[in-house]
Image (cartoon, rainbow, N blue to C red; front, side, top):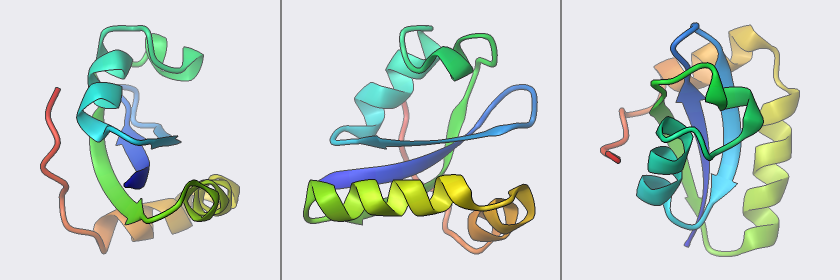
Length: 87
């Protein structure tokens, strides 16, 4: 499976990314070896998670989410179930 996720960072910002293993990726972000953006914003938590059967669709969705303004991202997060992913 391929996943698109939104992280809530310690400073209140959001980060959107792609992975094939959400638990591993969350751990990487919180260990400071994930994206450069999240390194100074730990701890982070996954607040939105979508799964797809192929990489191309997931990557397209990641791009779509990254283009959204903050208000739209907040609405997306508010309307989703809290994912159960832990590092």
